[in-house]
Length: 354
Image (spheres, rainbow, N blue to C red):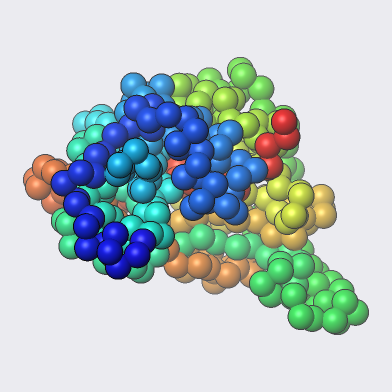
């Protein structure tokens, strides 16, 4: 925006509204301007990813100014457990302000409007975002990490990009052998991996469900998995994993990067059981030719335990939560927080083919 446009900007004319209350072309124009790196997925997946039917098409939330979308804030809504209460929760995703309208306080405007759509809000974000959220009443939560169980780490573009091919092969081979030893030590070679079928949802909703009485986490019932997995545009890439009576849900990624996402894990599980699940899936992934396995931990003690046993790298994510109910906020702060990679929007999607 020019200096003259900034001077004449009137925040009172900014309207927060659902994406369903603007012309579709207006929304897609915003995606083409702001999310250029996701044009092969977001314009096709946004209704599914925001689970719009679950929230009566109230989202994603947009900011509109003079007939143009200038802000966007998505959500992944679900039922959330807080102690013995089941409430409406939502993960914050796809938070952006159009480049021409930044530094005008619009981030606060859209976030405050978005926060009113649920009982409890959660997010994993970067440092800049967490500072914004803390100023409007969010609380920073426990340390959360993306875990990388590397098998052939130097195939990752950020690690082996400038490495000569010959040296990369030697280094990957040495790492693979060491990883095989550790995964074989702590894991099980008896891993049953099968394509996800509809009847598996009943098994998943029973097995991969948080059963602790006092915890903070999402309800993983049949309806959740039906939306999250069966209705996903990447359904054919999901696999059900069984390891000695414990279940997990993984996704196979094999286009631009060759890895496995560990999306959901059977709960409750001890640290040793979590180690066995990670090591077993790591061993299976190694045998199938994958380069690494990604997972998520919202428990710093679990993260440190897994890192002490396996060849893992961790990436820190700021985690925060909010409720307009102060006593509920206090209650949440005292609870263990249980999340997996598939709960939020860490998953990468295959390009849409028309």
